[in-house]
Image (cartoon, rainbow, N blue to C red):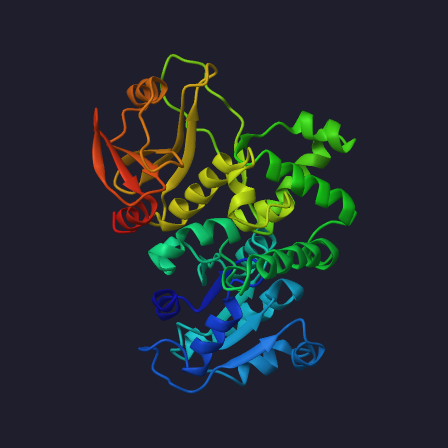
Length: 387
């Protein structure tokens, strides 16, 4: 975050609600922005869901121009898309005064709309950073299982009891359905979207099948595609594309779809504690999604993530194409003593990765033969972050 603010006039911090964007932004603003910007004056914070703060921006260019030399935080920026033109003018004036970096920190809960709106007006002036829920590198090792069951939203993870955590997650889902989707996306009946969201939870990590979902919801394929686009834009779902290898085999061409927070998956399926999750068929797919999300977030910038699967079912759960033309293959198993199956060996021969890992739920790291290394999730995330 601070590196971007030192270099770019504006930084957009994206993430779903309740992950701590506002807390982080306020801390930076109260400190006067990151060190090295040439000023330590306390920043300005405006919440664009607050009518009083929106009123201050009636003459946006005039108001923002008065705060030159201070970091201005604009929370829920997608509520005021018309601001981007004014921001461009203020930024350019600041650049002419020698205030090139760290002028604005923009917070948003939706990705694509904000990217499109800001990209049209602030090209070359803005950087993007995503803040997700907590992951395994941010909690104690003994908390990894709780993190998987409850998910990474701080109120859910830190709740006193499993019941309190489940109640928070249920209300989080309800708020998105009743309020945020209506405000950020197209008009979709809350009951319909809840059913769709639950279907995605049941099919966690499954290959996208629009026709099957459309039949279940009694809508057409284009409508279902619009629904999943919305979930992706709200940073609640991830589409993992297929890896295209130059092999003489027929490969799966549809993406996989994951709900990004495992706690939300469990709440949608009414699985409120560890025993309920472990006794449900979704446990393996939920763990896979938890690992995929952790590793994609830990990977270096400009890493391309995908999965490999042939029409016969030979598969690698996660293929990471890292900067420097390096390819890492990751197979995911929930047990602490996983085995390497013949299908994985065949897939590795097809992909020929530079490194191959078998991520498991334990902590030990050891070789499995054939160039495959078993490794715990936390250590895998740390290795990947430093790659």
